Figure (cartoon, rainbow, N blue to C red):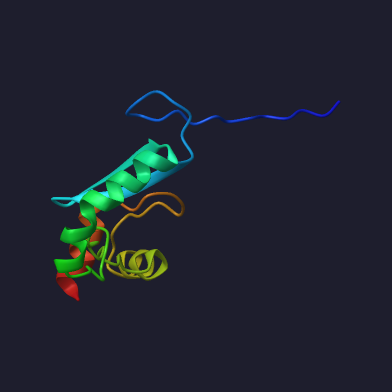
Length: 105
């Protein structure tokens, strides 16, 4: 048996049927609104003089932080065993072992 799913968008302003979802941003926040063709055109007309005078932002999204790269667990285990520290053969290496390894290197 075949199924057909129909999604109908409703205009967020006047509760009529919407023809598109308009995405825009202001003050560092992104918004989207479902609008009929008429309301979408009206929104674009309102923004038109501001967009004509504005500069485009080329970079979007939030900056990301680089995560610190942990030393290779095999190297840490080998170093710990060579220095008389007890380290499990498998699983998580205790923080004190990593701290000692980092202090030595």
